[in-house]
Length: 371
Image (tube, rainbow, N blue to C red; front, side, top):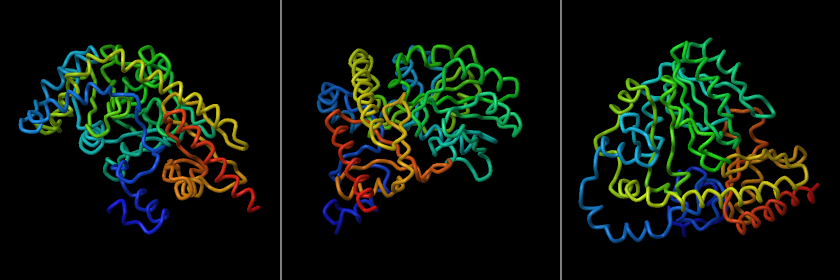
C-alpha cells in the first residue's frame, strides 16, 4: 500500500502490524525492530556507490568463499561456517528440515518454532516472573522429550536477558551425552558488556554438539543486506546445513560488505559502546515510570511489564502509534504468561528515546485521567 493511501493513523497501524519490513517508507519512529543505528559508517555506502554497476551486473561468489570472508571477520576456519541470507534462512533449514525434535525456552524469537513442522517443537517456559533460564530443568526436559536440538537465544528476545557463559557450558555438556545439539543464538551479544568474554565462538572446538547462530543484520545495522552465519565444529551438522542453501544465496552487496568489514573493527566496537550508553539511559528513564517493571537489559532493547492497573500492552502500543507516531512491540503474541502485559522497546538515539518516554507517560496518563 502507498504511504499516502491511509485514511487514519489507526488504519496505518493495522497495516504496519502485518508487515515484516519496509518501515522506512511509512514515516514513523521505529522502536520495534532491533538494529545498530551507529553502523555501518558512511565510507561503506560510498564504496557501494562506486561499485554499484559491478555489484549489480555480476554473479556473487558462492558458499566456500563466503565462509572464508566470514572466517576472516570472526577468526575461524571456513569449514566451520555456513553463511545464510540472514540467520532466518539457516533457522528455516535446521528447524524445518534437519531437526527431529527441537526444544526452546519461551518467550523467545518465534522463528525457530514457526519454521518447524507441526508437533516437532517443545516450548519450555522460562521461570516467571524473572524470565531466567533454569539450565538444569531445561536439560532434564530436553532429555525427557528426546530432543535432538535445543535452542538458547542469549541475550534472549524479547526479554533482553543474557544466559551466563558458565551456564551455557554446563548445558552443552549435559546435552552432549544425549546426542542433542545446542544452538546458541548470539545475534544480540555484541550489545552486552564484554561480548568477547561472554561469547562461545572462541570455545567452539571444545564442544562437538555446539552451534552458534548469528544474525549480522542486528549488530551491524544492515537489515536490508540479509546476512547471518552458523558456526560449529560439528562437520556433519555443518555439511547438512550447507547442503540446504542454494548456490548464490548471498547477493553482491552483502558479499562486498563482508569484504569491507575487517577494515572497520574499531568503528564497530565504538558503535556498540554508543548503543549501550543510549540503552542504559533509556532503561533508567523507563524504570522511573510509576508502576512499570523494567528488566535490566543485556541487548539493545528493553523488556517491560506495564502497570497492572492500567491498559494492556497492545492498547498502549496502539495509542502510542496513533497519537505519537511511534511503533513499539507488544508481547501478546509470545508464548508466555500474561503476554498482554509486556512490551519490548528498541533503543534508538538518546533524543528519540527521551521522546518515547514522554509519549509513554502521556498515553498511560490518559488512562489514569479516564479513571
